[in-house]
Image (cartoon, rainbow, N blue to C red; front, side, top):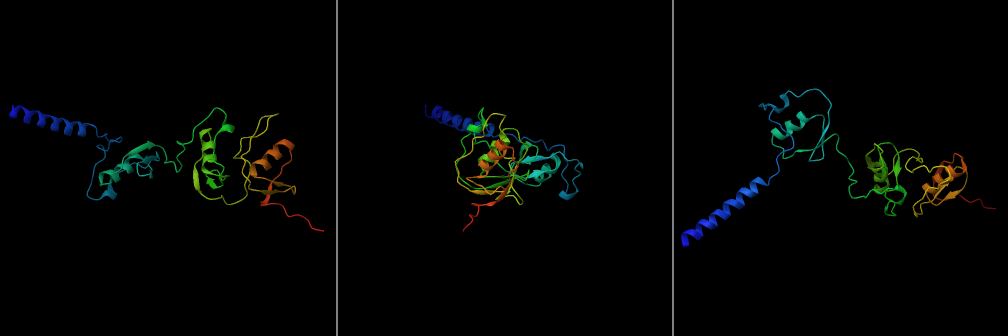
Length: 207
């Protein structure tokens, strides 16, 4: 009986060990066709640009260059084909009507690769999730004047729904708007090309 009990325990231990090994995910990239040399700089990789994203968040010019890192000891793998994205929009839910997306009412500007400043990361993701081929360039405002490209232009007879954020801007028409979106809404409603003169309220004339 004792022998049988010991045998069962050993069997369970072996099953646990092998199941743990089997559960380890295999590498997503096959580097076996790339030869390892003594000098990793001399691995003959093709001179083609077919970017891939590593699990370390680094974009490699092609799969071979990623394998050079892996074959020389880097604990990384292929995350996906194409350039790595600097922004993760998976936590922002996409809806049928982009105007009803629930973004926080905070001002934490980010600059996109299209040169447009968005009031926060969520609003940038709104544009990305609705088809814009852009990414995060850097945190903070883009250099240069802002425009209205970040806001969806309403169809004729409709109005844009602006966030209730008070971040006043002074228009080139001398009118103070509660935020950049309301200025753009006025531009589209009136048909007048109103620009941003400066941030903050317009200076009031004093007698």
